[in-house]
Length: 410
Image 1 (cartoon, rainbow, N blue to C red):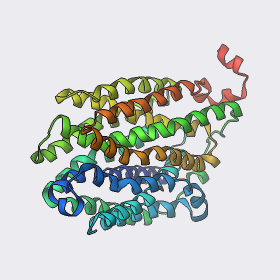
Image 2 (image 1 turned 90 degrees about the vertical axis):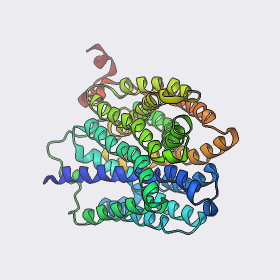
Image 3 (image 1 turned 45 degrees about the vertical axis):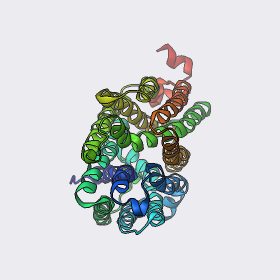
Protein backbone atom coordinates (compact mmCIF):
# COMPACT_ATOMS: atom_id res chain seq x y z
CA UNK A 1 0.00 0.00 0.00
CA UNK A 2 1.44 3.46 -0.92
CA UNK A 3 2.68 5.65 1.93
CA UNK A 4 1.30 8.94 0.58
CA UNK A 5 -2.08 9.59 2.32
CA UNK A 6 -3.70 10.97 -0.85
CA UNK A 7 -2.65 7.93 -2.88
CA UNK A 8 -3.82 5.56 -0.15
CA UNK A 9 -7.18 7.31 -0.10
CA UNK A 10 -7.50 6.97 -3.87
CA UNK A 11 -6.82 3.24 -3.61
CA UNK A 12 -9.56 2.80 -1.00
CA UNK A 13 -12.00 4.90 -3.04
CA UNK A 14 -11.22 2.75 -6.09
CA UNK A 15 -11.79 -0.44 -4.06
CA UNK A 16 -15.09 1.02 -2.86
CA UNK A 17 -16.09 1.59 -6.48
CA UNK A 18 -15.59 -2.13 -7.17
CA UNK A 19 -17.81 -2.99 -4.21
CA UNK A 20 -20.44 -0.41 -5.21
CA UNK A 21 -21.05 -1.77 -8.69
CA UNK A 22 -20.42 -5.43 -7.92
CA UNK A 23 -23.13 -5.59 -5.26
CA UNK A 24 -25.72 -3.98 -7.53
CA UNK A 25 -25.37 -6.81 -10.06
CA UNK A 26 -25.26 -9.92 -7.89
CA UNK A 27 -29.01 -10.50 -8.20
CA UNK A 28 -28.93 -10.11 -12.00
CA UNK A 29 -26.95 -13.36 -12.31
CA UNK A 30 -28.01 -15.10 -9.08
CA UNK A 31 -31.62 -14.97 -10.31
CA UNK A 32 -30.72 -17.46 -13.06
CA UNK A 33 -29.69 -19.98 -10.41
CA UNK A 34 -32.58 -19.16 -8.08
CA UNK A 35 -35.09 -19.91 -10.84
CA UNK A 36 -33.46 -23.29 -11.45
CA UNK A 37 -32.72 -24.45 -7.90
CA UNK A 38 -34.98 -22.53 -5.51
CA UNK A 39 -38.15 -22.05 -7.52
CA UNK A 40 -40.34 -23.35 -4.69
CA UNK A 41 -39.31 -20.37 -2.54
CA UNK A 42 -38.78 -17.57 -5.04
CA UNK A 43 -40.84 -18.68 -8.03
CA UNK A 44 -39.80 -19.84 -11.46
CA UNK A 45 -40.12 -16.54 -13.36
CA UNK A 46 -37.14 -14.28 -14.16
CA UNK A 47 -38.98 -10.95 -14.02
CA UNK A 48 -40.55 -11.14 -10.52
CA UNK A 49 -37.29 -12.25 -8.87
CA UNK A 50 -35.28 -9.54 -10.63
CA UNK A 51 -37.87 -7.01 -9.44
CA UNK A 52 -36.91 -7.84 -5.83
CA UNK A 53 -33.96 -5.53 -6.44
CA UNK A 54 -36.20 -2.50 -7.07
CA UNK A 55 -35.98 -1.26 -3.49
CA UNK A 56 -32.20 -1.52 -3.64
CA UNK A 57 -32.03 0.76 -6.66
CA UNK A 58 -34.66 3.16 -5.33
CA UNK A 59 -32.77 3.69 -2.06
CA UNK A 60 -29.46 3.74 -3.92
CA UNK A 61 -30.77 6.76 -5.81
CA UNK A 62 -32.92 8.49 -3.21
CA UNK A 63 -30.39 7.90 -0.46
CA UNK A 64 -27.70 9.79 -2.35
CA UNK A 65 -29.54 13.11 -1.93
CA UNK A 66 -28.75 13.74 1.78
CA UNK A 67 -25.25 12.24 1.72
CA UNK A 68 -23.44 15.52 1.05
CA UNK A 69 -25.21 17.08 4.05
CA UNK A 70 -24.52 14.04 6.26
CA UNK A 71 -20.83 14.14 5.32
CA UNK A 72 -20.63 17.71 6.60
CA UNK A 73 -22.12 16.60 9.93
CA UNK A 74 -20.43 13.22 10.45
CA UNK A 75 -17.27 13.50 8.36
CA UNK A 76 -16.33 11.78 5.12
CA UNK A 77 -14.16 9.14 6.80
CA UNK A 78 -17.06 7.95 8.96
CA UNK A 79 -19.39 7.91 5.96
CA UNK A 80 -17.07 5.70 3.96
CA UNK A 81 -16.72 3.35 6.94
CA UNK A 82 -20.51 3.11 7.03
CA UNK A 83 -20.45 2.32 3.31
CA UNK A 84 -18.07 -0.63 3.60
CA UNK A 85 -19.55 -2.13 6.77
CA UNK A 86 -23.18 -1.39 5.91
CA UNK A 87 -23.03 -2.84 2.40
CA UNK A 88 -21.06 -5.86 3.61
CA UNK A 89 -23.42 -6.62 6.49
CA UNK A 90 -26.49 -6.22 4.28
CA UNK A 91 -25.12 -8.64 1.68
CA UNK A 92 -24.42 -11.25 4.34
CA UNK A 93 -28.00 -10.76 5.54
CA UNK A 94 -29.27 -11.18 1.96
CA UNK A 95 -27.56 -14.56 1.82
CA UNK A 96 -29.26 -15.69 5.03
CA UNK A 97 -32.90 -14.74 4.34
CA UNK A 98 -35.68 -17.31 4.03
CA UNK A 99 -37.97 -15.76 1.43
CA UNK A 100 -38.56 -13.10 -1.24
CA UNK A 101 -39.58 -10.28 1.11
CA UNK A 102 -36.55 -10.83 3.31
CA UNK A 103 -34.29 -10.72 0.27
CA UNK A 104 -35.95 -7.54 -1.00
CA UNK A 105 -35.51 -5.90 2.43
CA UNK A 106 -31.84 -6.91 2.76
CA UNK A 107 -31.07 -5.66 -0.75
CA UNK A 108 -32.89 -2.38 -0.04
CA UNK A 109 -30.72 -1.90 3.06
CA UNK A 110 -27.63 -2.61 0.98
CA UNK A 111 -28.79 -0.04 -1.57
CA UNK A 112 -29.18 2.60 1.16
CA UNK A 113 -25.59 2.12 2.36
CA UNK A 114 -24.40 1.91 -1.23
CA UNK A 115 -25.86 5.40 -1.82
CA UNK A 116 -22.94 6.80 0.20
CA UNK A 117 -20.29 5.97 -2.37
CA UNK A 118 -20.83 8.23 -5.38
CA UNK A 119 -21.54 11.57 -3.68
CA UNK A 120 -18.83 11.15 -1.03
CA UNK A 121 -16.28 8.87 -2.69
CA UNK A 122 -16.24 10.76 -5.99
CA UNK A 123 -15.76 14.12 -4.26
CA UNK A 124 -12.90 12.67 -2.17
CA UNK A 125 -11.31 11.21 -5.28
CA UNK A 126 -11.46 14.46 -7.27
CA UNK A 127 -9.82 16.42 -4.46
CA UNK A 128 -7.12 13.81 -3.77
CA UNK A 129 -6.29 13.66 -7.51
CA UNK A 130 -5.21 17.31 -7.70
CA UNK A 131 -4.50 18.48 -11.24
CA UNK A 132 -4.93 15.06 -12.91
CA UNK A 133 -8.65 14.66 -12.43
CA UNK A 134 -9.30 13.03 -15.81
CA UNK A 135 -6.73 10.31 -15.26
CA UNK A 136 -7.98 9.65 -11.72
CA UNK A 137 -11.60 9.46 -12.90
CA UNK A 138 -10.63 7.15 -15.75
CA UNK A 139 -8.76 4.82 -13.40
CA UNK A 140 -11.64 4.94 -10.93
CA UNK A 141 -14.02 4.09 -13.76
CA UNK A 142 -11.93 1.02 -14.57
CA UNK A 143 -12.30 -0.18 -10.98
CA UNK A 144 -16.06 0.41 -11.10
CA UNK A 145 -16.22 -1.50 -14.36
CA UNK A 146 -14.16 -4.26 -12.78
CA UNK A 147 -17.00 -4.67 -10.30
CA UNK A 148 -19.54 -4.70 -13.14
CA UNK A 149 -17.49 -7.18 -15.18
CA UNK A 150 -16.63 -9.53 -12.33
CA UNK A 151 -20.12 -9.66 -10.82
CA UNK A 152 -21.62 -11.95 -13.51
CA UNK A 153 -18.72 -14.38 -13.75
CA UNK A 154 -17.95 -14.65 -10.02
CA UNK A 155 -21.63 -14.81 -9.09
CA UNK A 156 -22.19 -17.54 -11.69
CA UNK A 157 -19.25 -19.55 -10.31
CA UNK A 158 -20.41 -19.16 -6.71
CA UNK A 159 -23.98 -20.11 -7.63
CA UNK A 160 -22.78 -23.16 -9.57
CA UNK A 161 -20.33 -24.34 -6.90
CA UNK A 162 -21.91 -23.31 -3.60
CA UNK A 163 -25.43 -22.01 -4.21
CA UNK A 164 -26.94 -18.56 -4.66
CA UNK A 165 -26.70 -17.63 -0.96
CA UNK A 166 -22.89 -17.67 -1.03
CA UNK A 167 -22.99 -15.36 -4.04
CA UNK A 168 -24.15 -12.68 -1.59
CA UNK A 169 -22.25 -13.75 1.53
CA UNK A 170 -18.72 -13.91 0.04
CA UNK A 171 -18.62 -10.35 -1.38
CA UNK A 172 -20.31 -9.16 1.83
CA UNK A 173 -17.43 -10.52 3.89
CA UNK A 174 -14.91 -8.89 1.52
CA UNK A 175 -16.63 -5.51 1.96
CA UNK A 176 -16.57 -5.87 5.75
CA UNK A 177 -12.84 -6.67 5.63
CA UNK A 178 -12.21 -3.52 3.58
CA UNK A 179 -14.23 -1.55 6.13
CA UNK A 180 -12.05 -2.79 8.96
CA UNK A 181 -8.94 -1.77 7.00
CA UNK A 182 -10.45 1.66 6.28
CA UNK A 183 -11.16 2.22 10.01
CA UNK A 184 -7.47 1.65 10.70
CA UNK A 185 -6.56 4.47 8.30
CA UNK A 186 -5.93 7.93 9.75
CA UNK A 187 -8.67 10.30 8.49
CA UNK A 188 -7.31 12.46 5.67
CA UNK A 189 -8.93 15.45 3.94
CA UNK A 190 -7.16 16.42 0.72
CA UNK A 191 -8.74 19.88 0.84
CA UNK A 192 -6.67 20.70 3.92
CA UNK A 193 -3.38 19.47 2.46
CA UNK A 194 -3.38 20.93 -1.04
CA UNK A 195 -0.04 22.54 -1.87
CA UNK A 196 0.41 24.93 -4.74
CA UNK A 197 -2.99 24.10 -6.19
CA UNK A 198 -4.66 26.64 -8.45
CA UNK A 199 -7.74 28.35 -7.02
CA UNK A 200 -10.96 27.36 -8.73
CA UNK A 201 -11.69 29.90 -11.50
CA UNK A 202 -14.63 32.26 -11.69
CA UNK A 203 -16.72 30.65 -14.43
CA UNK A 204 -19.57 32.75 -15.89
CA UNK A 205 -22.87 31.76 -14.33
CA UNK A 206 -24.53 31.25 -17.72
CA UNK A 207 -21.89 28.68 -18.68
CA UNK A 208 -22.17 26.89 -15.34
CA UNK A 209 -25.96 26.86 -15.69
CA UNK A 210 -25.72 25.39 -19.20
CA UNK A 211 -23.32 22.69 -18.01
CA UNK A 212 -25.34 21.79 -14.91
CA UNK A 213 -28.69 21.66 -16.75
CA UNK A 214 -27.19 19.41 -19.45
CA UNK A 215 -25.56 17.26 -16.78
CA UNK A 216 -28.77 16.76 -14.78
CA UNK A 217 -30.89 16.05 -17.87
CA UNK A 218 -28.47 13.43 -19.12
CA UNK A 219 -28.19 11.94 -15.63
CA UNK A 220 -31.68 10.45 -15.91
CA UNK A 221 -31.12 8.89 -19.34
CA UNK A 222 -27.59 7.63 -18.67
CA UNK A 223 -28.66 6.31 -15.26
CA UNK A 224 -31.41 4.23 -16.82
CA UNK A 225 -29.26 2.97 -19.71
CA UNK A 226 -26.25 2.14 -17.51
CA UNK A 227 -28.26 0.25 -14.93
CA UNK A 228 -30.50 -1.53 -17.42
CA UNK A 229 -27.61 -2.62 -19.62
CA UNK A 230 -25.49 -3.97 -16.78
CA UNK A 231 -28.50 -5.81 -15.36
CA UNK A 232 -29.55 -7.43 -18.63
CA UNK A 233 -26.14 -8.48 -19.99
CA UNK A 234 -26.19 -11.95 -18.34
CA UNK A 235 -29.74 -12.58 -19.61
CA UNK A 236 -28.82 -11.24 -23.07
CA UNK A 237 -25.91 -13.67 -23.31
CA UNK A 238 -28.10 -16.54 -22.13
CA UNK A 239 -30.87 -15.78 -24.66
CA UNK A 240 -28.67 -15.17 -27.67
CA UNK A 241 -25.61 -17.38 -27.09
CA UNK A 242 -25.90 -19.97 -24.28
CA UNK A 243 -29.52 -20.93 -23.67
CA UNK A 244 -28.90 -24.02 -21.53
CA UNK A 245 -29.09 -24.48 -17.71
CA UNK A 246 -25.67 -26.16 -17.70
CA UNK A 247 -23.97 -23.16 -19.28
CA UNK A 248 -24.45 -20.66 -16.42
CA UNK A 249 -20.67 -20.21 -15.88
CA UNK A 250 -20.30 -19.55 -19.63
CA UNK A 251 -23.04 -16.93 -19.43
CA UNK A 252 -21.09 -15.20 -16.66
CA UNK A 253 -17.87 -15.36 -18.67
CA UNK A 254 -19.52 -13.88 -21.76
CA UNK A 255 -21.03 -11.05 -19.70
CA UNK A 256 -17.59 -10.45 -18.18
CA UNK A 257 -15.90 -10.06 -21.56
CA UNK A 258 -18.68 -7.83 -22.91
CA UNK A 259 -18.38 -5.37 -20.03
CA UNK A 260 -14.58 -5.62 -19.68
CA UNK A 261 -14.25 -3.65 -22.90
CA UNK A 262 -16.10 -0.82 -21.18
CA UNK A 263 -13.41 -0.71 -18.50
CA UNK A 264 -10.66 -0.40 -21.10
CA UNK A 265 -12.57 2.48 -22.66
CA UNK A 266 -12.78 4.30 -19.33
CA UNK A 267 -9.01 4.04 -18.95
CA UNK A 268 -8.56 5.67 -22.37
CA UNK A 269 -11.32 8.24 -21.89
CA UNK A 270 -9.79 9.38 -18.60
CA UNK A 271 -6.55 10.25 -20.35
CA UNK A 272 -8.31 11.93 -23.28
CA UNK A 273 -10.22 14.14 -20.86
CA UNK A 274 -6.97 15.65 -19.60
CA UNK A 275 -6.05 16.59 -23.20
CA UNK A 276 -9.28 17.88 -24.74
CA UNK A 277 -12.67 19.31 -23.88
CA UNK A 278 -15.35 17.06 -22.40
CA UNK A 279 -17.78 17.52 -25.29
CA UNK A 280 -15.25 16.29 -27.85
CA UNK A 281 -14.92 13.03 -25.95
CA UNK A 282 -18.57 12.69 -24.98
CA UNK A 283 -20.20 13.32 -28.35
CA UNK A 284 -18.56 10.40 -30.27
CA UNK A 285 -19.50 8.03 -27.44
CA UNK A 286 -23.12 9.19 -27.56
CA UNK A 287 -23.17 8.82 -31.37
CA UNK A 288 -21.89 5.23 -31.18
CA UNK A 289 -24.34 4.06 -28.53
CA UNK A 290 -27.71 4.36 -30.30
CA UNK A 291 -26.99 2.14 -33.35
CA UNK A 292 -25.24 -0.44 -31.17
CA UNK A 293 -28.27 -0.77 -28.88
CA UNK A 294 -30.63 -0.97 -31.84
CA UNK A 295 -28.51 -3.75 -33.34
CA UNK A 296 -28.73 -5.72 -30.09
CA UNK A 297 -32.52 -5.71 -30.38
CA UNK A 298 -32.35 -8.32 -33.17
CA UNK A 299 -28.84 -9.83 -33.45
CA UNK A 300 -28.29 -13.50 -32.62
CA UNK A 301 -25.22 -15.66 -32.02
CA UNK A 302 -21.59 -14.72 -31.47
CA UNK A 303 -21.90 -11.33 -33.20
CA UNK A 304 -23.79 -10.21 -30.07
CA UNK A 305 -20.55 -10.25 -28.07
CA UNK A 306 -18.60 -7.55 -29.98
CA UNK A 307 -21.70 -5.35 -30.39
CA UNK A 308 -22.42 -5.64 -26.67
CA UNK A 309 -18.77 -4.71 -26.06
CA UNK A 310 -19.16 -1.55 -28.18
CA UNK A 311 -22.31 -0.66 -26.23
CA UNK A 312 -20.49 -1.20 -22.94
CA UNK A 313 -17.60 0.97 -24.13
CA UNK A 314 -19.94 3.85 -24.99
CA UNK A 315 -21.96 3.52 -21.77
CA UNK A 316 -19.00 3.28 -19.40
CA UNK A 317 -17.02 5.92 -21.25
CA UNK A 318 -19.93 8.33 -20.80
CA UNK A 319 -19.88 7.71 -17.04
CA UNK A 320 -16.26 8.88 -16.79
CA UNK A 321 -17.03 12.02 -18.79
CA UNK A 322 -20.16 12.79 -16.75
CA UNK A 323 -18.38 12.55 -13.42
CA UNK A 324 -15.59 14.84 -14.62
CA UNK A 325 -18.11 17.50 -15.72
CA UNK A 326 -18.83 18.40 -12.10
CA UNK A 327 -15.12 18.66 -11.29
CA UNK A 328 -14.56 21.14 -14.15
CA UNK A 329 -17.59 23.36 -13.74
CA UNK A 330 -18.45 23.30 -10.01
CA UNK A 331 -16.41 24.79 -7.16
CA UNK A 332 -14.95 22.29 -4.62
CA UNK A 333 -17.15 23.53 -1.75
CA UNK A 334 -20.29 22.58 -3.69
CA UNK A 335 -19.14 19.33 -5.32
CA UNK A 336 -20.32 16.81 -2.73
CA UNK A 337 -23.78 18.40 -2.69
CA UNK A 338 -24.01 18.54 -6.49
CA UNK A 339 -22.78 14.95 -6.76
CA UNK A 340 -25.59 14.06 -4.33
CA UNK A 341 -28.17 15.82 -6.52
CA UNK A 342 -26.71 14.41 -9.74
CA UNK A 343 -26.74 10.82 -8.51
CA UNK A 344 -30.19 11.25 -6.98
CA UNK A 345 -31.52 12.43 -10.34
CA UNK A 346 -29.53 9.77 -12.21
CA UNK A 347 -30.68 6.89 -10.11
CA UNK A 348 -34.30 7.86 -10.44
CA UNK A 349 -33.74 6.51 -13.94
CA UNK A 350 -31.62 3.68 -12.60
CA UNK A 351 -34.32 2.57 -10.16
CA UNK A 352 -36.77 2.17 -13.03
CA UNK A 353 -34.44 -0.20 -14.88
CA UNK A 354 -35.07 -3.37 -12.88
CA UNK A 355 -38.90 -3.40 -13.04
CA UNK A 356 -38.86 -2.11 -16.63
CA UNK A 357 -36.64 -4.97 -17.81
CA UNK A 358 -38.72 -7.52 -15.94
CA UNK A 359 -42.02 -6.19 -17.31
CA UNK A 360 -40.88 -5.85 -20.93
CA UNK A 361 -39.20 -9.25 -20.91
CA UNK A 362 -42.21 -11.02 -19.44
CA UNK A 363 -44.55 -9.21 -21.86
CA UNK A 364 -42.57 -9.89 -25.04
CA UNK A 365 -40.66 -13.04 -24.07
CA UNK A 366 -37.24 -11.60 -24.99
CA UNK A 367 -34.99 -8.56 -24.62
CA UNK A 368 -35.63 -7.05 -28.08
CA UNK A 369 -38.10 -4.42 -26.87
CA UNK A 370 -35.82 -3.56 -23.94
CA UNK A 371 -32.94 -2.75 -26.28
CA UNK A 372 -35.17 -0.49 -28.40
CA UNK A 373 -36.24 1.41 -25.27
CA UNK A 374 -32.58 1.80 -24.26
CA UNK A 375 -31.77 3.19 -27.71
CA UNK A 376 -34.53 5.78 -27.19
CA UNK A 377 -32.92 6.89 -23.94
CA UNK A 378 -29.58 6.93 -25.77
CA UNK A 379 -31.05 9.55 -28.10
CA UNK A 380 -31.82 11.76 -25.11
CA UNK A 381 -28.21 11.47 -24.01
CA UNK A 382 -27.08 12.43 -27.51
CA UNK A 383 -29.18 15.61 -27.41
CA UNK A 384 -27.67 16.50 -24.01
CA UNK A 385 -24.17 15.96 -25.39
CA UNK A 386 -24.95 18.37 -28.22
CA UNK A 387 -26.14 20.99 -25.70
CA UNK A 388 -23.10 20.72 -23.43
CA UNK A 389 -20.59 23.63 -23.67
CA UNK A 390 -17.36 23.12 -25.60
CA UNK A 391 -14.96 25.57 -23.97
CA UNK A 392 -11.13 25.56 -24.28
CA UNK A 393 -11.05 27.17 -20.83
CA UNK A 394 -11.65 23.70 -19.38
CA UNK A 395 -8.01 22.86 -20.06
CA UNK A 396 -6.62 26.32 -19.24
CA UNK A 397 -8.71 27.66 -16.35
CA UNK A 398 -6.85 30.96 -16.33
CA UNK A 399 -8.64 31.82 -19.60
CA UNK A 400 -12.00 32.07 -17.80
CA UNK A 401 -10.94 35.53 -16.66
CA UNK A 402 -10.63 36.73 -20.28
CA UNK A 403 -13.46 37.71 -22.66
CA UNK A 404 -14.74 34.79 -24.81
CA UNK A 405 -13.84 36.65 -28.00
CA UNK A 406 -10.21 36.91 -26.93
CA UNK A 407 -10.08 33.20 -26.11
CA UNK A 408 -11.66 32.27 -29.47
CA UNK A 409 -9.12 34.44 -31.32
CA UNK A 410 -6.19 32.40 -29.99
